Length: 347
Image 1 (tube, rainbow, N blue to C red):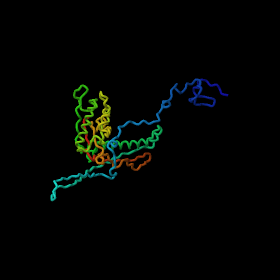
Image 2: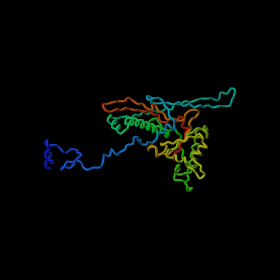
Image 3: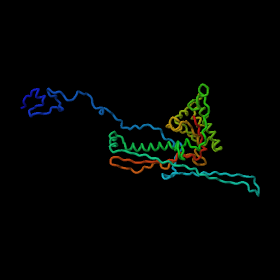
Image 4: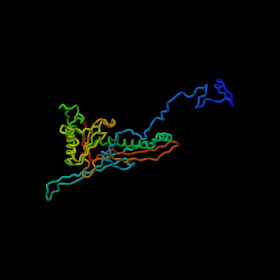
């Protein structure tokens, strides 16, 4: 039977068997001693936090160079230089005579050269890093690999658009062999006065924008010496930021897109972020459009080109981390017939 303890003994921790620690969790409060826990009606926030099982990826500017200008492989990752043969038929005739030696036919050949550019990056992850992300239901290794492919493709897209300075490697928008850019037609604002600029957004009249396409087609007809007509398969490349112009409608319910389709039934309209100053990532200060013929005599007019689309090198494993090099090779954009393209700058 336990002896009755005084309040002072209880406070000092005395019991029947001797000293004991009463600072422990207990359902019932011990007389004369206050709880070691502060009053609380809350819970750790993690128990009231919901985590979406979907992983939301950030939005990035689309890579559309290959879609717009086509894509093909030229050589392989060992190829540094490419040459493309071009031939031209020529000759002259003279009045016939039984003994005349006049008139002849000839052909000339030339080789256009391009240089390739090869580039790389590393994909890396640590064991603990990947495992910790796994606790959050994020496949970290897959995300690292997806990031490497995305970055390489973004680099390829930029090279296809603007080339590499210092190399014979040019882009679709700045190839020096392209004919000089032409200017858009003057624009009239809603008050009937000359607009502040000749850009497409300075007006909402579809016919004023259509006049620019007409001007480009007329120039293309001259450049190709008549080897194009209104039914020829063509592609009109416009800045993504200006695609709203295709919806311009006048008081007669005439829409720009419908007018283009009616008069140029085989014209494809493509939007390209890099063609505008706003979405080019600061590379271009010009807002421009291009109109080009897709084929001439069965030969492609233009293509983006690569040596190696993706080379995944050896996976290197260390004590607690892994890395892998990935690389690509690029020729930029090759205009086989630069004369088959018209550029209009300042739209």
